[in-house]
Image (cartoon, rainbow, N blue to C red; front, side, top):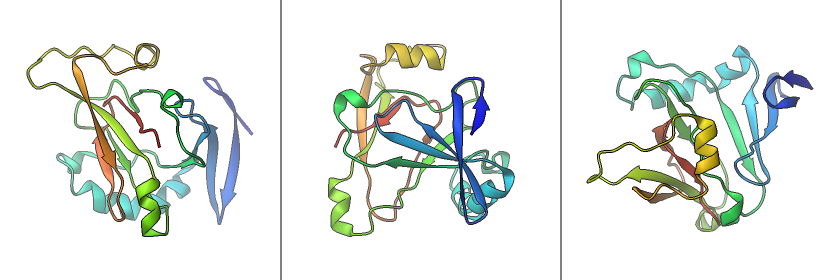
Length: 174
């Protein structure tokens, strides 16, 4: 275990020389994040990250900062998935979340897998009304703000989902 000033204790997990921090996500019931714990573990993700970063605008200004596996071992009920942002306070276009599903192995099982719901501001409303801090987002975002529409991305084999780290989103119920 390692002490964390914000979240208490995290357990450490090792796999074939890589070290991960195991943390309950707090945004989906039963979801666990396995975060790369050190530079050597992040390097395992570097080759894929370098390929995918080439698809982004301003890719020459970016690098892989952190990496994790997200594990959900059962279906997600609507009330068990919270709206949230992954990153806050970073200039627009410089922080991205990239989700690359690596399961299921059987193509037919993809139809029963959930997706990610994202909030997109209505184009006719130029006001940006997202709260000013992640804490406010988590407190206020039981439902998306009324001036936003919800778009659901359904996962398919060999596809990933990329969105800016300050986009309000959640795991879609399934």
